[in-house]
Length: 387
Image 1: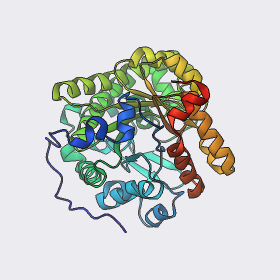
Image 2: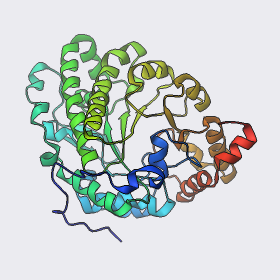
Image 3: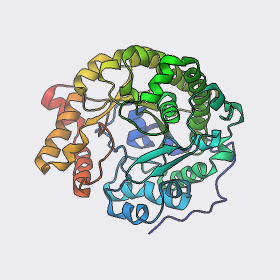
Image 4: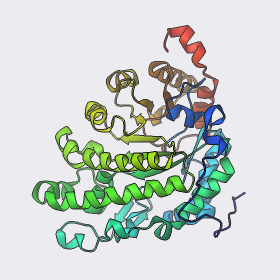
């Protein structure tokens, strides 16, 4: 049954002013405590893209409504967000939305074409195009993205004290790449041409997006998000040198702004950072984001024990099971989850290395979550001597 919400029910800009009891101390949900760096009794578990077409209940909506209708209609977005939690008892509920959601609010229009992916109708490829991009100072998420606030408030009310509510955003580089390329592309030829021939265009767009994303994260937190994940989905398209130039400074600007606001307002909201294909960039990420993000998500291209060693003790680590493992036998799923958690040690949040793929059996996702819930760190310490 769909979750019904009153569209006029969400609060204004002030959002949730007081920290509710479920956010503090031992009573906080396990994923929230782990993301803060606290030692918990078992690995918390959730999955990127856990609300998706692999679920029959999800397909009842995706077969009927367009993506943007689903993500921008709170009643539907709330229902889709809650489905995996109800089905698999995940330790996190992540709002159903998309990293591109704020773009139309600054004049960059997109649509999601089934079987193809996002399409930008007015790509940004010149200074002239930049004139059509709304200034970050005019971006008002309460006005422009009120459906996100409605969704988050209802989800927070529904999940309070039971699980952790996650918001999310795309990083400036990834949103800029979509905006310049106009679509997903394996080579990013149009985007890279701009980087190498008109870098000032890219930098101006990146700077605008950094300010927009900062405001969007703050809005999500005001409306109930307890943890926010930043996705740099197209990080793998850049060399380490390019990544230092076109991505990390702008992500650092975002998280520095958000952390300053959190400090000023007395809030404790962990930030998770995920750079797709980040195995060769972990040291760069550590240097740029240490003290600015709390959790680093890694994909399956890097050994999680190696990632832990390279990142050091300052970060909680999240990941990193190959999503296609969930197409395997039950014993393979159990053994892979167990080994991932043992290799990661404590201060780890179990997740896939990327999103759940379409065609994944729901029973496999259930087993993935069950296996994590059945693990106890006390037993891992006894078995391996890992703290």
